[in-house]
Image (cartoon, rainbow over all chains, first blue to last red; front, side, top):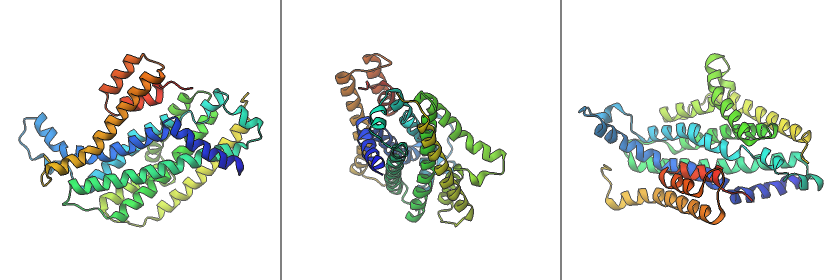
Length: 260
Length: 68
C-alpha cells in the first residue's frame, strides 16, 4: 500500500515534470475547441475550394451532435495515438534507465508500482476527457444553437469513453513491461487497439470488445437519447476483467524482470 | 462566417485556442534554447514547432526534448 501511494504521488510529479500531462491535456483540449470551429467552417472551405454552386450545408451534417461525434472520432484516433506515444515508455524506459533499481532495493512492491502508474493515468485521462467534452459541448452549443444535445447524454459518453481509455492504459502498461524499448510497446499498442474493432467486424465478439463502447457513444449521440443497452453492461464487465488480467500480467512480468 | 455572433464573441471563442497554441510554441522554443534537443538539430526542431500546428510541439515534447 505504501509503494502504491508513493508511486501514485511520484507518477503525478513525473507526469508534470516530463510534460506527459501537458501533452495529453493540450491534445484533448485543442481538439475540443477546434472541432466545432472546423465543422462550422467546413461547408465554406469546401465551397471556396470547388466551383460547384451547391448548398453544401444541406449535404454536410452540422449540428451540436455532429460536433460531439466528430470530437469522439478524433479522440478515438488522433488523441489515442498521442496518449499511446506519451505513455509507451512508462515501464520500459524506467527499467532501461535503471530507475527501478533504487525502489526495488528499498523493498518497493512491484504491484504498488504498476497500480500506482495505472491509477494515476486512469484518473488523469478521465479528468482531461471530462474537461474536453465539456469544452466541446459548450463550443458546439454556441456555434450550433439550433440543435441541442442533452447534457446527460454527454456525461454518459464521458463515462463510456473513460472506461475505454482505462483499458488502453492497462494494455500500454502491459506492453511497456514486456518490451525493452518503448517504441515497440507503442507500435504494438497501436496495432492491437486499432485492430480490435476489425476483429469485431469479422467475428461475432463485437460486444466483448472495448471498441463497442465507442460505437455505443456514437449511437447515443446520434439518437440524443440514453437508450439502455444491456450489451454495454457485458462490455463494461468484460473490460473490468480485461483490466484486472492485464494489470496482474504486468505485475507478473515486472516480478520476473531483470532490472539491474 | 459565424452568423449570429458579434466580433467580440468570435474573439472570445478563438482566444483560448490561440493562447494554447502560442503558449505551447513559446514553451517548446524556450525548452529548445535552454535545455537542448535530441534526435534533430535545434534549428530543425524550431522550424517543426513553428511550422506544424500543435503536432509540431507535441512531437518535440515526445521525442525531441532532452531528458536528464
